[in-house]
Image (tube, rainbow, N blue to C red; front, side):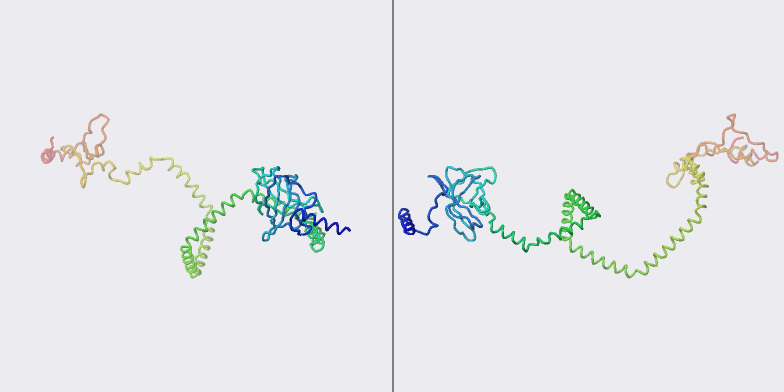
Length: 378
């Protein structure tokens, strides 16, 4: 009797709907979420929609705004058609994921705004894979837990904890190392700008060396030849260094032995050097006539070309000549250019020229004739 009622009910539903019967899954379930008289369809692409079924609810911020219309395969992805109520405004920038009300509860499609809601999700819109995600299935969680408990190495946690306790024992070495490592990492973090600049400069240097690779190779070849020459002269260089070492030893021994004498000589020279320093500019002026003897520097003003201009006045009077013959010194008077006053005798205290000494008696007769001969006066 019951079977007949079910068959009659199915035939009645098929007749009323006018659709082809595709099994009980095609029949609308009681309690499906209403979408109102005005609804529209959008599409969401999911990488996995294993346990999601049609007529599941679509929620926006926890409020039911529609239901799952259909689920179809699109390549390796699932294409889920969502029918939304037009009265519930859903923003365009939404993220869709498959959630579950409880551990064994029903599945649903949750819509969440990525940021501040903007725009409105219109009819025919598509939510791509970049904005969808599939929730973790209970089967996956239980499988992962089983793997962890059975073959995930959970039994080694005790050994790991024991080894860590021994490594971080009471000696404090590991703690000190960790503190130093923390300080090192902190300092390295503070210097990251300088490190980046150094690496950039090193990159520039590497590019420059790479651009000048020919010159660098040539320099390396020349350096190799220079090294070969030094290797050939190794014996002579070693001998030279040996002689230099012996010379240094002798010089050191000489300085040590004569150190007191050198200090005494320097101490003895100190007064002389002090007096020379105190003379100042007087010493060069005193030495100047010695360097230009017998003529002083003023003679240079009288030198013109290869001759010297002199203006000399000679007194050749008989008395003067007679005095010279008698052993008196010659008296020259008159200006001499550049040597004025050098050959002139110093004036006497009376302002008169000194008289010559009297001549001997046997020379008195010669004075008139000598004066006439020389053109002088008596």
